Image 1 (cartoon, rainbow, N blue to C red):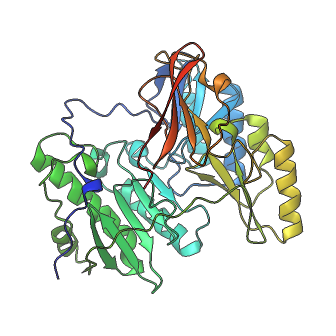
Image 2 (cartoon, rainbow, N blue to C red; image 1 turned 45 degrees about the vertical axis):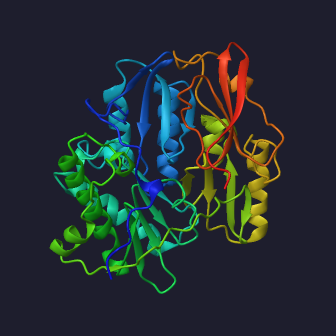
Length: 388
């Protein structure tokens, strides 16, 4: 049976891209009003204790003493000096966070924060494959992979290529509105092959598309052909749509996992270090952290309380849950106000995002209450996105 046709939400936002992608990275720094900005991709979302300490030290020594979390689970260092690029690169190499200079901006991946070892291994293997290929740097720094453990949390973040763990032990590959069932062992290579199919479609379209949804309507993404040429067995799954699940809420997940959010997605280095000791720290695309593997519930509750005292959001009923903001002044020249100082919770069921200008950087997916600055301390409120 042939694969289903692309769904409307996957396409129809075609753009003509007549320039290269200027998305910042760990080596290509962005010059902001508050100094240079480095964006570090974390493909598996996992940091070791040593990596946390090295990043905190780098933010203190080279930056402004803070770390920002992005809606893709990346970490940003701000307030960097113009000549600190080489020093930061040395730190990242020492920490094992820069496996390939050529590929560092295309290592864009979100992973279910509560995923088990197999799904985590898919992400690690996909990252290794991305870094091993000569052609993958042609992907835009905006192209996004999602590795979902089946709950649908990161599948809901509008990725370009999604791997979803299926109940029968296989993996579902979703791209361009089509879904294919592949063996779990083949999942990372199938996702990489799908990205290659997108690049071929983007070249054929000639529009310079950075993402699948930017391809012109009618432009086919020949995933089937690319999978066949890669000798990957894939079964089309007609009319399959990845589930839309919810992110982990602040608090305890199970008996031994701690989940917290960073208020407005920014932490001091002292807060960052307060996550330790930890077997591992998982950075989430909802601007938070997950600390798994506590020995028992009592130990997890003790750590959750300590993180609350450190300034993290630790309760699902906190009024700050669901409140996000762009950088605003003084970091962004386009901002009309000091957004982080202005931002506050609002009543209602929808998330609320505060923006310094109409670009709405970092806004959430789905429907949200949109607060856009119209001047110093003045905002226009609307509802954006679909409420269905």
